[in-house]
Image (cartoon, rainbow, N blue to C red; front, top):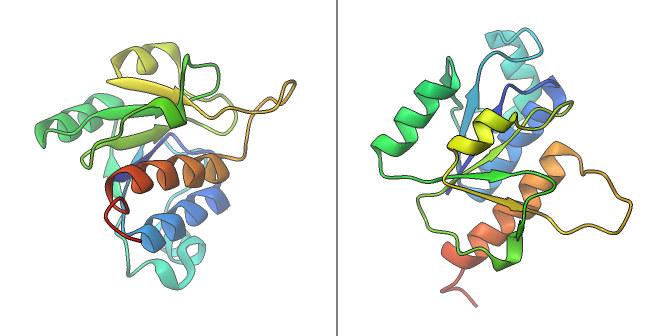
Length: 153
């Protein structure tokens, strides 16, 4: 199970995604360009002391990301508002990579069309969207429940 961020906008959310991935033992990918300058100094600052537990994999564009994921037999599962399949009704596989879009815009339609599947997190009527890493934590938790934690009490 892995997490991927498409063109992340906010450095603090990127840091929280690093911590989430580290705590769940999940890989982390990010697809450029980022909406903030990404230097070693910024990466160290936002990841706090979790930086040694996960090494984010940088992809220069979405095509290269797709090639990398599909090259290892993984599926790209978009987590995006407005999708027909609710998160809890989807069957996750261990090799899935959960893809979340930009904080300001989500995933563009051409990106969604290239994903192997797309799910949404059910929300209360009138609610628009969750914080990026909150949504990632919910989705990763459900994927881990189905695949990684299914044999644990």
